[in-house]
Length: 144
Image (cartoon, rainbow, N blue to C red; front, side, top):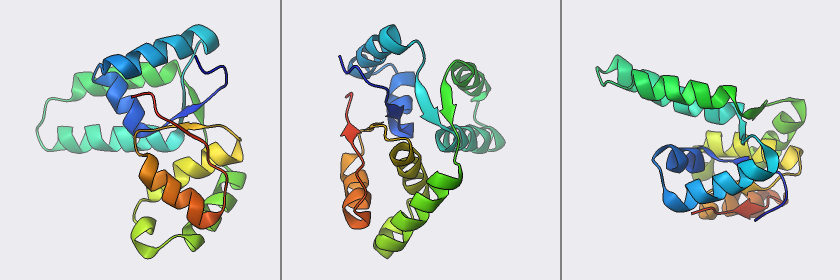
């Protein structure tokens, strides 16, 4: 088991909510050591945005949204603060135009880097591009 705090990316949280057995096992090990999962305010926004659009479009996602909000109430939620904003601007200005469309990834990466925490994601390739282009050290973990 990894014995350090880590930030879960939105995709990892989605895999956990879908019951991915590998991600669930790693999350349980993490919870045993740390008691709560760590996510970002950006992930909360991304998930709630998705649920609310689905509900607006007539899909029955109220229960999933309530379950997610209950999960969030038991997580450490890292804010997007001034240091993260500075780093996000560094990343944004360094990456190719196509990578700027992944604003959520840029914001999540900047929060993880500003707190010197690894990021748990299945989306390593995109985050590696952000890290390489901006010359920031973003450590990546994959629980899947």
